[in-house]
Image (cartoon, rainbow, N blue to C red; front, top):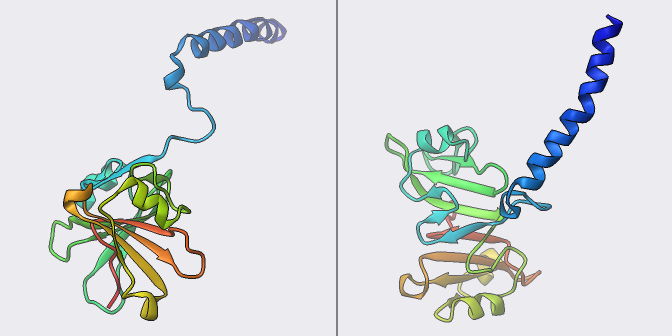
Length: 178
């Protein structure tokens, strides 16, 4: 018993050295520094989550959580939470197989560098064709900024009046529960 303990202690520095060599030999781009890089938001989707994908495909890739009820005012609607490093929800069609209709992100992704917490001016700099819609300010207390298809994709931003900072980015639209 004592000999195996001595052998294990002798092997420990070798194992540590081997691990350090493997880490140092790997390219710098493969090593995460701090957090994971933010996912890209495009007209097609967010990161690996794309419009039109089925729930089964997303679940198999471990991109979303469990299927759960969607809007309580509509029958048979379903949604799922995005998994880390993203935060937000994915809504699905009512038919089977359930396919992605829209994606709403509250953290972990950027659209041309614009992220949650930025301002409307940042959206306009990144997307010159952005359309600001103030018709929702009285009812919902938010300003919607829509990016047309010819302006970089069908993307929509929600900017609350009280903070004046983006709190939600959606592809292709923000789904309101009606």
